[in-house]
Amino acid sequence: MCGNNMSAPLPAIVPAARKATAAVIFLHGLGDTGHGWAEAFEGIRIPHVKYICPHAPTMPVSLNMRMSMPSWFDIYGLSPEAIEDEAGIKRASENVKAMIDQEVKNGIPSHRILLGGFSQGGALSLYTALTSQQKLAGVVALSCWLPLRKSFPEAAANSANKDMHLLQCHGDSDPLVPFMFGTQTVEKMKSLINPANVTFKSYHGLPHSACPEEMIDVKRFIEKQLPAISDQ
View 1 (spheres, helix red, strand yellow):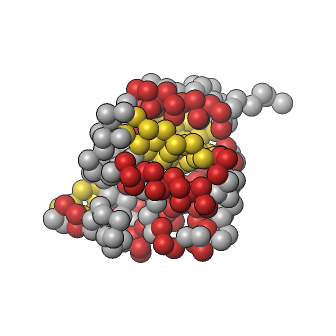
View 2 (spheres, one colour):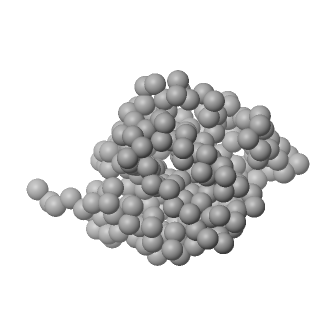
């Protein structure tokens, strides 16, 4: 299949319990779908927030012997020196920006949209926010890294998100995306956006997954960045 956004099914959505005045777009990890994350957000939902969990297109992944699986872009390796799928990352980022545009057309301004993701999805959310001219409410980046990191700060020259709020979370026992990637990424992010707005949380014994404590931290961050707005 071609790696465009038409080759994936419609996103899993948790609708707002009342009128949606804010949205979270959350991108799953390699080989996953949006369904599990939609269920996770159902457990921490905030009444005025709509949660959108898209599904990545299916493509061959070099890291996994070119087996086809849901993937936002190709991954060649998980070491800091590994070559990266620059064209695929940029294409995927444009698709995410189109999703943000769609929500703006639906009546939710971009500054009331929070972007997030886990692992590969978290990497894509960081890259998209840093290269976007759409001002976002913030980013939740779980167990991930900053892709194409050597292209920054130049790649973020026109970003509208230099003051965005970032919550980055990582398990200290992650065997796939090492904890060190998380700590190095947060230091890089502090050099690219206002460091006062960057929060890094670690979870003792957590492997490459999420945990209830982390999801409570995510909920609190969303509540803070996307507060209810009273009807005029």
